[in-house]
Amino acid sequence: MSIQSVLFFPIFIVLTVIFSLASILAALMDSSGNRAHRVGAVWGTWSLFFSGVRARITYLEPLPPGEAYIFAANHQSAFDILALLSKLKVQFRWLAKESLFKTPFMGWAMTRVGYIPINRSHPKSAYKSLLLAAKKVGSGTSVLIFPEGTRQEPNHLGEFKKGGFILAVKSGRPLVPVSISGSAAVLPKKSFSIKPGKIDIVVGKPIPTKEFSVKAVEPLMEQVRAAIQQQFRPVNRGARL
Image 1 (spheres, one colour):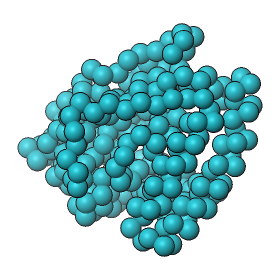
Image 2 (cartoon, rainbow, N blue to C red):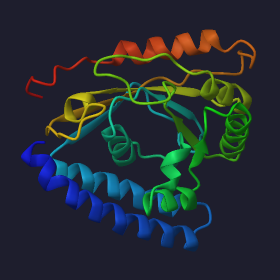
Image 3 (spheres, rainbow, N blue to C red):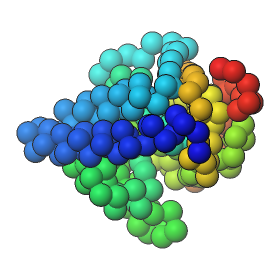
């Protein structure tokens, strides 16, 4: 484990406890979860600062304010969450694996904010989560998904799961591809050794979903995957960022 990791993780635990409690308090004051989500964004920003990791976001075209979207991002590192919270300046809710909601403090805060747990090993439960997410999007709140389902090996784009795309079609909202590069070099899957560096986020052009059907989402999946792949920049962890 690197010296940076030894110094960062105790600070990260303290930040997580403090901001989780602040998020819970904010959610009690604001039932929409918007204020609590903003607290989470500050948590992400401070966590990046103390880790020595920088994040930059680029929009291929401006997103009209007041619209709700389904954001679909590739996933290679736990730092993807921190970077997206810090830099994606819109109100959104995660569609995240159910086990995260059982984590002390952070899991409690995720529940209060209104993030959506999903258990992909139980199809009926997962479908109910998708319906809940579609309802949130229908009410005007964006949702962010990781269509690969879990973190992937460095520089590898995994197979996409259909669930998030069914959600997009059911909601009728545009689907926005989000390409994240550099996070695997900072902290790859199954590693606890942090290397300070830079994470680049590219937010692509919204893709309309109304022309697709729930029974035939494969063309939509391919279109989103191609958009993410086009902006994805493989990184050698040994290289300087």
